[in-house]
Amino acid sequence: MREAMRGLTTRGRSFLAAGSAAAISAFILGEKDLLRVAILLAMLPLLAAAYVGRSRYKLACTRSLEPGRAPVGSSARVILRLQNMSRLPTGTLLLEDRLPYALGSRPRVVLERLGAHQASSVAYTVRADVRGRYPVGPLVIRLTDPFGLCELTRSFPSVDRLTVIPQVVPLPAVRLAGEYAGTGDSRARSVAVHGEDDAATREYRRGDDLRRVHWRSTARTGELMVRREEQPWESRATVVLDTRQAAHRGEGPTASFEWAVSAAASIAMHLRQSGYKLRLVTGTGIDVDATEIGGEGAILDTLADVKLTRAGDISVLVDQVRRRSDGGLVIGLFGTLSVAEAEVLTGLRGNGATCIGFAIDSSTWVNMAPGERTEADRAHGATALALVRSGWRSVPVAHGDSLAALWPAAGRGSQGFAYRAAMAETVGR
Image 1 (cartoon, rainbow, N blue to C red):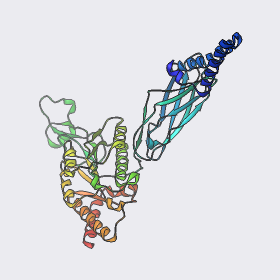
Image 2 (cartoon, rainbow, N blue to C red):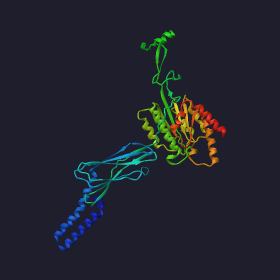
Image 3 (cartoon, rainbow, N blue to C red):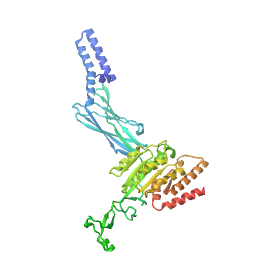
Image 4 (cartoon, one colour):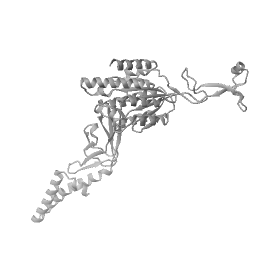
């Protein structure tokens, strides 16, 4: 009740002051009718305060986000549903949802009175140009009585989170070499066609099920042969994201690191849709295995939060990838690399992995003097050549390049082209 009394508006305080003055005058003049008026004037704000003070226990609020994950630069819809749980109608309600600065200003919505057990919904939109996870809420409500004598501010404790994910661009279908990895006795065999299971034959051993006898091979070899069940060959890929702060340039959503994060999300989603068992590794120590159902969401949530690291070494990133390296395809998104760092990436070529590196020339994200630009281009060409010599298929990236246009270069047959291009660029300068 004390809090409700502190919420009296100017009108309510005026009614209370008028009632007090009328009561004093009634005692001085001995007027009973004036005393009745004084009691009425004083009771009105008190009753309004009591009415508004108990309203906080009679309202229920739910919030929903559509969608819960929104790409950078897109809008999300926030729907608030407010229900009056009491038998008394409410006054006009002013709703204000608290938002972080990145989602814009706080929305204020006026909701007309709600009848007994009545519910109503209001909606507003938010937009974020920077990826991340943002809290939405809590909801603050200003409650008033029908006469405007008392006004209180209440807040609901519930807070939802809007995940702003990197921009995902569609990529063309490209056949990638080295996409298969598997286990079993015939692991070294090459795979000519797509398929889940592969079978081979071996000599009959005591205890083998006779139903597994392969009669055609038996007739050809003259010995009893049985089918040997192989573990399935599967498409596996590891997406590696370079998060070293020194390797990237630019500020805000247009920085080279944001291009790399968007490219990582696009490649990961493209490979998952193509049936790959996927793994995401970043320089911040993040290692996400997206082989299970719903793995796409885990990758997008991870990339929504990933940040640059001041201290970083490319060898640490290599060691982290090699902890669980099981062959297949390795696609790296690297910022500026030195020749020595490009040579360190040779360590990812083991276990039959095919490595494709998007070498981002982050110097093109900033303005340079002609002499500095020439030197930066020469250094990037030498790095691209060192990357190719390390066994990687190198795809150079400059500011303004589209990932969809670069993606075909990651396909089969681009290795020699990349080598010749890097060699020509280095020699020509």
